[in-house]
Amino acid sequence: MMSRHAARYPTRSAGNRHLALFDRIHKAGIPLNGSLSFLNNWTYITSNPERDFEQLTTTGPYAGTHQAFETGLRFAAHYKHLIPSDANTKFWASDSKRVIETAQHFASGLFGSDWEKVGKAALEIIPETFDRRADTLTPGDTCLRYLEDEDRGHDNGVKMLTLFQQAYIPAIAERLLVEEGNRELEGFTNWEIFSMQEMCGFETTVRGSSPWCDVFTREDWKNFEYGRDLVHYYRGGPGNPYAGAMGWLWLNATANLLREGPKAGSMFFSFVHDGDIAPFLTALDIMKDAKYDRFLPVTHRAEDRIWYTSTVMPMGGRVTLERMTCSPTDPVHSMNKTFLRININDKIVPLSYCKSGPGLSCPLMEFIGHVDRRRIEVGEFGDVCGLDGDVGGITFLRQQQPE
Image 1 (cartoon, rainbow, N blue to C red):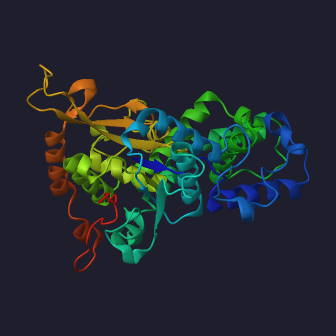
Image 2 (image 1 turned 60 degrees about the vertical axis):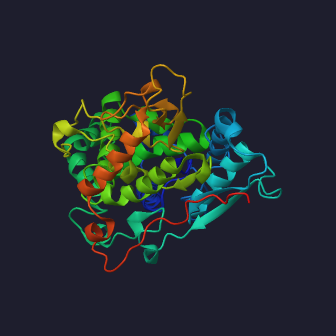
Image 3 (image 1 turned 90 degrees about the vertical axis):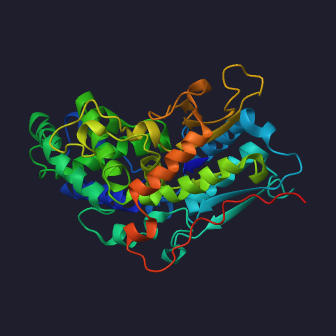
């Protein structure tokens, strides 16, 4: 399983935008009208932004700590019978405080609160450093060209969002300032309006609800959703030329474990950022918008798109690969009894290129063949990323087998 860290406070860049906006409004000293009138008595979601930005929320109905723990409980109900009672299951997290805490709370739900003390499981932290090369959970930190390419690399997602903001945000600014009687306030920038929309989700996560949500119309929210989709689609999804090679590293390592079967171990859990799940989905070739030739428009919203970030990468999102073995006496599948099934956030998602097995699964060897083909299609990680010498591969994704 690959999991994104659970719900959290705004990232530092988003938080800085929010604070700058609210500081500007406060210094203006102008009572606000209409849907923004709540700001006359509103307080920010945390009194200590420097401490709380980028960390898991611990209170409220959507607390990230609780969400991770509940996910662990659900996995225990579905899969715990697969773990040997005497096993010390190893699992992995990239070296980020919120990611590590998500993994720990998940483990408490799956293995019990004493998992570390009694040796039921062991968490291994994988550094998010460039020198890891291909032996990493965070290939976006080790792919040189992805980091340096200003036009098509990491920053491409924000660039595409900025272009789309020009298509839908000016009308919102006009409504809030002119139609609602806030002309005395200096005009809002596109990023300020976008920050207001972000606050709906952030405050809801922390406090359970937010007046920011009522500031915008349903159409505004559809456009905001699409803007977030563009960020991830072009930053690490099918719209990014480096994403497939980055995501193939984890896909290949997992495919090798699936090929080995139970002798390699029964459970493998990896915890990462959303920016690492998107490349994996790209390598898997499961969410591409072929109709748009991998290029979603930025002048208008693509209503019939396949890529929805809210579906595949919500806070606490996860992708689970299930290896299934059917009974040899099964009259339908007796000739090929091992299958692979994709479970994304508790929903079975069939592979468009292979779903002939039971429960929308794919015969395992057909899936392995597809993974091998994808290596040719997306390119070698070292070559695509401009890395010299032997870049290696993922070596840590192993379980210690009992003697």
